[in-house]
Length: 362
Image 1 (cartoon, rainbow, N blue to C red):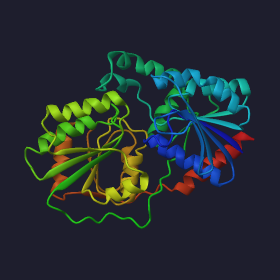
Image 2 (image 1 turned 90 degrees about the vertical axis):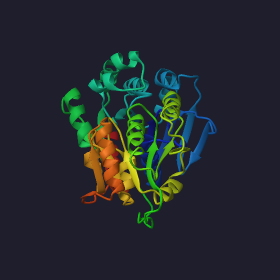
Image 3 (image 1 turned 180 degrees about the horizontal axis):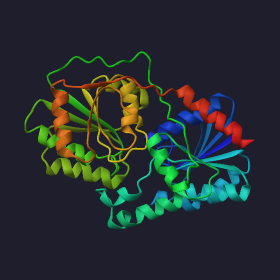
Image 4 (image 1 turned 180 degrees about the vertical axis):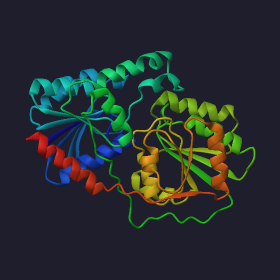
């Protein structure tokens, strides 16, 4: 089959959705399907290349890239879509143009819905007042665009989606792939290391983690918080650096640039606990990967995370810095809960998507 993916960002951009779609696109190419990705161009990337069997076309737009990609990717999607059996898009960039193109071309359109905010927009920090009061309406419009199929990665997101589109969505759990030869078994060192890795976006709760860590460090001094952060969204990244300076935590918090996946997994072997402070989560790829490597995880109860987290873990109420502080102290004192391991197979993930494509795309 000929599959066209329309994704706001793709590798080498770092993020859960990017990792998920890279896994899916390369999995489909490996199974003999013809795969093309249309995405935003980012610095230090090629405008066009074939990577692991996937043809990538990166469109160069001015800032704000999300706005231009959403509306001005239309002629490119239309052109590439003519040669495709399926147009598969992802929330939120490019969704409008993908939907319109598929209607004109009479091609199957699929929308991956990673998470749903709606009423949560008004309570999010680090975003403008305009976003707080228009975000829910914009999101509702996008989720009601006429895609042939809408798919989530978690039951939590599916339940929310089905209330909006009247029970027409389906769930395909995300698939992860971690090295089989890596398994966390770190011996405790002099400094206890907490780690967050991912985007600094307003929904990820990094500011909440920093405030909680500030309180913990007043009680326990031999701690370090490592933030492996992408520099996008730029405004939130800068806000985090300012917050660290404001709270005088520069000696205790280290910011690192994102690693390649294999390097990241090896780095996870060197920390004592991963913290997932999300205030909203549609699946939680970082949590799933850490748990698959047996790294202890402190996670919020936001969204789908209770479906994903397993092994040695602790949960706290989303946005509650006091609760997170107590759980970080418990982790330091080696007081963990244990949940039976959960498996998110990469092969199962790819097979289920292939079945959907074959069933609906011919």
